[in-house]
Every structure is written in structure tokens, then in C-alpha cells.
Image 1 (cartoon, one colour):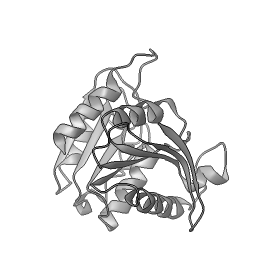
Image 2 (image 1 turned 90 degrees about the horizontal axis):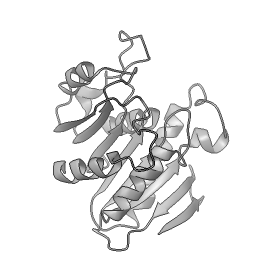
Image 3 (image 1 turned 90 degrees about the vertical axis):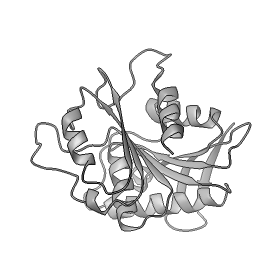
Length: 214
């Protein structure tokens, strides 16, 4: 069951959708989007539904920049507010589940999740969908500088055709993380990860690899 969520009882507000499983495993996952999308993206919805079916309570939410701007990239200098929004979303979900809470995101959302947790390990684990290791064609501009500070286990899902980082670059970057990591490689996938068919098996594969890893 999916419920719309608009919690403005504290700042920053939490806006999105709460997936309530028919049979809960008492665990929760906060899931957010990339720089050019919102929480209604096809990838986020598919992954959230797959985790819901596996018993997770999932909070699929919009980052603060998207709440204030329906289209376009994040505001310059707004990343700190986006991380504060993720922290608030984790707090909201922790009020709904008794067990472990995880934090995940696609691209920009995943990067902000890692930056938040590197500074404050407030979740049991991370799920990073198409982590943007560097801008396309600019491998010298690495976004893994904070990886040595990640003390939280993390699972990465990465496509073999992702211009934001090759499989080899991801494998090398993950060696910087002192916590346990897992890399789920998706052959032929780009930055959006999903193929164009309605019955893409990837979300179920992600859940299977995630539950095995954690």
C-alpha cells in the first residue's frame, strides 16, 4: 500500500510517498532521486515497490531542492539543505519501523546520502544506485574524496555503460571505503539503470542482493 506523505511538523519538511508492506519485516528504507528527477521516477518507483513486496517500509521522497523547484538541477550551494532533508526523512521513517533503517538514492541523491552518512553514521546501511563517481568524460573530478570516512556498509548498483564511472573505476573507488561494500554490476545499463521494458528484473535482483549483503 502506498500513502502520500507531507510532513511539515519540522524543518526541513518531508514530502513523498510511504510504501507500507502487507507483511512487514520491521525494516525501513529511505529512497531519493537524482538531480534531474523526482521521487516519481520510474527507477525509484520500481525499486521501492520491490522492497515493499519484500517486507520493507519504504519512504520514497523528494529532496528539498526539488520541493522548491519542480524542474531543473539542484540549486547551487543547496547540497547541505538536501542532506538535512535526508536526515529528517530518516528520522521520520525511524518513527514508523522498529528495526533497521537504510538510506538510498539514485545518482545525486545517493551521493548526498554518502556525504551525510560519512559525517554522521545514522543508518544501518546504504543503497547507491548509479553513484556519480565523476562527471561524464571528466574522471579527474572524482566524487569519492569522502569514501575513506564511510564507516557504514554500502551496496552499489552500477551499469556497465554509465558515463559517470566505469566498472573498473567503481571497483577501485570502493577500495577506499573501510566498511564492507558490495558492487552489483548491471551489464549493458546506463545511468538510469532500467531497460525500457515493463518487466525489467533489476529491481528484484537489487532486493535479493541487498538482503543477502545485509
